[in-house]
Amino acid sequence: MAVQTVASSTDSASTPAVDLGPATALSCRECGHRVPLGPVFACEECFGPLEIAYDFSGYDTEELRRRIEAGPANIWRYAPLLPVPADVAGKPNLNPGWTKLVKADNLARELGVTGGLYVKDDSGNPTHSFKDRVVAQALEAARVFGFTTLSCSSTGNLAGAVGAAAARAGFRSCVFIPHDLEQGKVVMAAVYGGELVGIEGNYDDVNRFCSELIGDPAGEGWGFVNVNLRPYYAEGSKTLAYEICEQLGWRLPDQIVVPIASGSQLTKIDKGLQELIKLGLVEDKPYKIFGAQAEGCSPVSTAFKAGHDVVRPQKPNTIAKSLAIGNPADGPYVLDIARRTGGAVEDVTDEQVVDAIRLLARTEGIFAETAGGVTVGVTKKLLETGALDPAKTTVVLNTGDGLKTLDAVAGTGLTATIRPNLDSFREAGLA
Ligand SMILES: *Cc1c(COP(=O)(O)O)cnc(C)c1O
Ligand SMILES: [Zn+2]
Image (cartoon, rainbow, N blue to C red; front, side):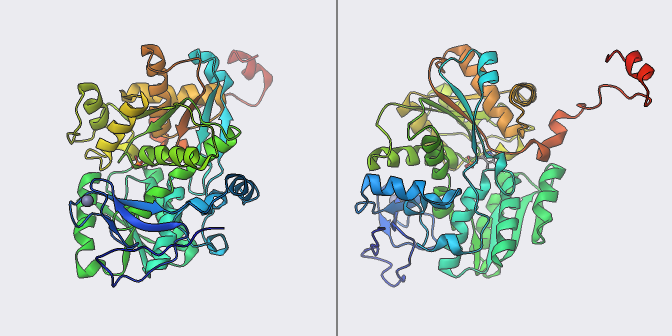
């Protein structure tokens, strides 16, 4: 059913045509210049970011819906909408996705939401964060382009996702992180046996270093999932939008609260929703996208509140390390989407992040990492300010697992220590 179209372009004509399913070309988000599918990420005309263009014109809506519903319980059920070869499901990968959409009635009651509140819980992915979705796309692109080493600059979760995916797919991996990450993130990234390099600096320094490495012979044959494979990587976030709508019964939510690091995830959730509307898989209606940051790294919410179109870089200082990107590549696009949909970008303090982690755990039995504390905290704040409508269907993303950021809730522990007898139990006031 997938329409195979070879990218046509006046330049780079020597680049071989590749099979990436319905993906047809790379298109500049700024100027629309198109180039053939390849391991490039910046427009040669204007340096704007490249993204995947598709040909979905051969799809019949009901046939596509049936095919998706009959597909596997992972992201590959949406293969007809992703930049991957048709036979992707048979190749060794971690098969992430199809995580739970939890109806959070207890949390809704606590926050006064009456229109239906859901937590999309991506801690249920193979390496316990949403990053498995994006890495799975980059891995397929890496195979097609003949890379033998997988790499990335990471705020923690991506390093683990790349390490695990490389291990399973038989790639070498060498990933780069700020040297001072949470122990849970470091162990999780190292355990898969690839090389893990700590960089003396913050994420933005790590990212700059990786850009240098790409241009150097030392980085030859390396697929950096979030740099030279970024257009493919980014598409993985669309699966969050697809799953949320399918799990709601092929319905758009009214409001979605999304964490922002580079902003890629938020922009691609919007792209995914737009595609579902265009394909007729959901009924068109307005939806609002809200972005969530930690106050200690809030370049996008600062710009949003000031009414600016440009995002001024910040030096991150927050416990929400997975979101600590001070110079977010997709920041301006996030601002566009929040404004176009009638959403907002908001931030919360580290203390509010911790309170929100505890709130979600106590009400729904979901233990979120700090990024989940950010989205739940921002949801609470936006309900208080009236930016979020409590009468509307609202989806909040939890993108990672609390077991990786235990320090955030340090001090949580035993209620009492007693001797193994009933007197001691009663003395502790627990009877
Ligand atoms: C990477 C990450 C995000 C969002 O990343 P973007 O760069 O904005 O796409 C959100 N939550 C967690 C836990 C992450 O690791
Ligand atoms: Zn351009």
